[in-house]
Amino acid sequence: MVDENEVYLGGFYSSTQLSLGKFAVGTGLYATNRRLFILRKDMDVTFNKIAGNKDFVPANLTPEQNLGIVNQLSSASSQMILSKEEISTLELKEPPGAFRTGHLNILRISGESQKIGIGKKKEYEYILNLLQSFSPQTIRMV
Image (cartoon, rainbow, N blue to C red):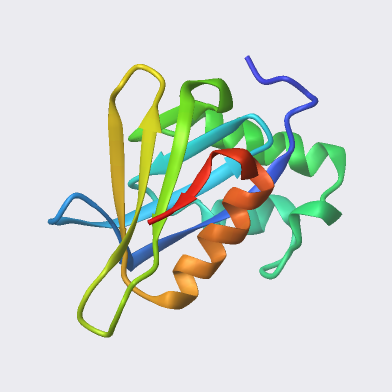
């Protein structure tokens, strides 16, 4: 069930610059004010249709558009959905060079973790901004 107070903050899918593990290239990272979604599916086209344009700003969505996007995220067959309360630390490492990757390591209170490889600085900066909106107190730079 989706809470109507849940607000879509943003996210993106990259077929080449985000990966789950070493070989599962093609990952999406999306966030609301309450949950983080890690998907193996590109939701960007779906969200653009709901918003009515390609370059929409999440803060400018109508309540109906926001609810539509949150519903799509909630019903997507996803790799992982984490509530803010489940996350203890969001470790971010910037990609150090052209052939080396950075990462986002999501550490859960339960002790489990999920690592997402980040290929380029542009994607790293977007993820950093997204996570600062999602849960700034849990971010740790490594």
